Length: 384
View 1 (spheres, rainbow, N blue to C red):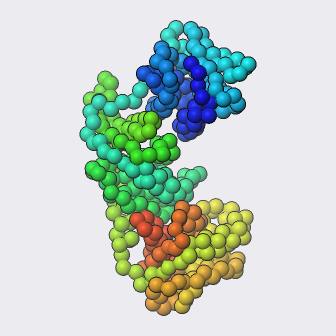
View 2: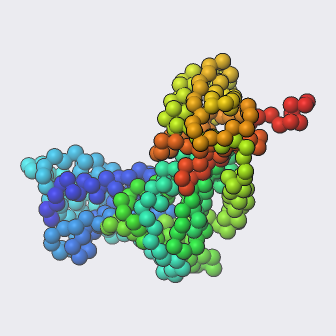
């Protein structure tokens, strides 16, 4: 079976991405069905299949070590290569080079990779690629703050998705608003969301509940299919967690909708550059080593100036632009890292920043809102 190298590498790269999201997916199945060669990987949680069109209909199936095969393919330089399979090996010929990868057997039978399929479908709808990419690129920024931390709950490492948007929260929160065709309530982990990278077009999304073998319990399953890529996953989430996440979600929505005395328009690049410079002075300080997740700064809003000062006396000033409303001078205490995570996912020139209730700072950009904690001491703490 002759394969065009460049086109096949594109399919192989998608499988490599899926493999990279979980090292348990160590075996790769190559199987011809009709006029497609399918590359499949799986673990106990997800199953990924990528279709690669071929010009002939043949009988072909092999299961080999994923890393060995993908590494070899990535280094082939000929325009095409040949794949053949016998009872013992997958034979690869590229130009004058020949390679053999041993087939993987279980109990003297060629290994079969279990497919995650959905029998009892309850929801099926289209989801745009723009929505998938916004979840991946925007909501994931909030969860990056959970990396390495042991003081956060399981909920603070998950993506809550319903028909109105995606919600993630750690020390702050991100509400990414969009509209799905049908109502759903899902909690996805980072491993599954990372697989959204496999898609370049809109997908068909399916949700279903299938019984667990030899049990009365049901498994929640989802699948996404588009442009020859199929991803299915078993969600290791129960109804209790879904109930628990709705409280924080509604609380953050209320904060976002609150009326604030200060409504500022700021240039994204100017603010991001200012914070980057301040962080460069603070990342090696003794205070930061004690708590690497918190770099304190004070913000003074005065007239048309947004002045940021760190604990070492370094100061940056960003101009508050036309269209803003500043009631009077106002001070905020923030974690610089929280603002940096938000700005790193901004793709627009200007953001809207609302504050004034002594609890939170709201950063709005289109359909995306971020809640950043205001660490200013309360009136009671000040009086003490």
